[in-house]
Length: 213
Length: 213
DNA sequence: CGTGAAATTGACTAAGTTCAATGGCGGTGG
DNA sequence: CCACCGCCATTGAACTTAGTCAATTTCACG
Figure 1 (cartoon, each protein chain N blue to C red):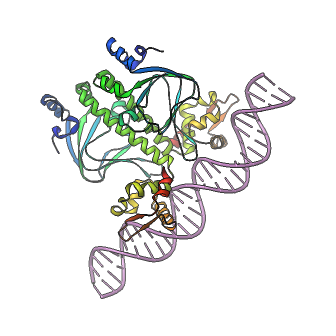
Figure 2 (cartoon, helix red, strand yellow):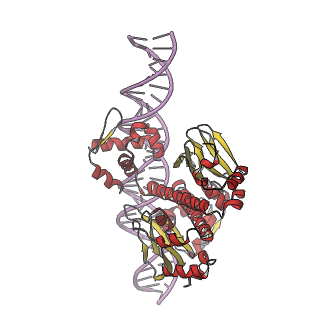
Figure 3 (cartoon, rainbow over the protein chains, first blue to last red):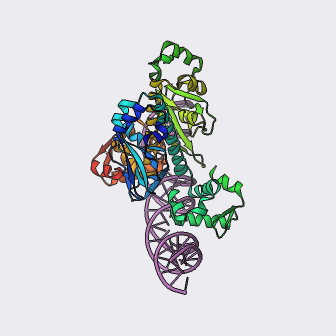
């Protein structure tokens, strides 16, 4: 994807609008592990993720990365900082190689703000983001590690077959040791069994659900 | 305030629009401690807080209230649940007596979504909310209790003169004991002194700032 | 097989909560 | 006037949760 027309947010724009948009934006490719922006950077650029997986995280004083979200195409990134003219509240790093459309926000604002379709898309993107943050708060502040693991098993059980436990632990903001201990505990209590392919068999969904609901 | 015209979000509407809005909305008064909605309730109503202070919080499994935010007029409340048609992610309770305008969201959507001014206001409200949530995450997940107290002292030092420590602790999501211990520690280390009127004198702003920045 | 990454396990540590005891202070009623 | 009550603050001790560090085992895969 390397044409503005292909971006859902802009499909409904007129030819003229697209032309103007092309003048204030550029595509740029990134390789895996490259940083798109750092927490604390000054904004000014609105990003639309068109390819790849982009991870958003905060860094705590000890240097640990606190996982917030991973974006996949097509996601609007950085609009909060732009609208509120504040610094980026988190760091964005590519997990795979990818591509973004970088848009000069000031000039976008002047040209396109009144456009109803774009407003609507922006609203959708914002509500999606609130949902994500609200979920982060729920998962990270309300749930204990045990509850988080129970939730992962019930809601995303297949993750355990495709990802390493270290990766899962990092996405759940806990250490691999903690994850390992909790899985052992669940096994010992007979809630689950895990076979050689890392497939988790749930024996007592009721109890596991009760842990996080 | 009991006229739709007085609500900033709607000041720019035409007479006809106001009339239509009146048909799908009602004002309602609440007394202190009344619940506007519970976490988990089904949505459908968009609220605009026109008077009073409304506290938003989540409840953890032990029954503790996790403070998220307090709204003051004029704030849009519950738009996420409405837009995304999900349940309210938190409980809202009046701290003082107050008043809201209750709007039937479905019908609002049909009539006013395309209105550019309203869209713009909604976008502003949403970004404000993202900022709040992003801040909650920062404050609650990144900062230690010591950092939170240092931050309160530097940024909201006057709170200590007007509020009881139990209230402050509840807004900062820590126990009164923890707050007390940290204040004692800061006093012992000579960072602050507290006089009889609960006024905090900061002696070493540099160190305190370093704790949370 | 052998090697390096991942997982497991135990001992220890850190941060904060909980629970209980104590002390202060302001208002109230006899 | 003062004894008492209730609320708040303070402090200590035990407890809980999860992270850290280190040693060991398991596992996948060339």
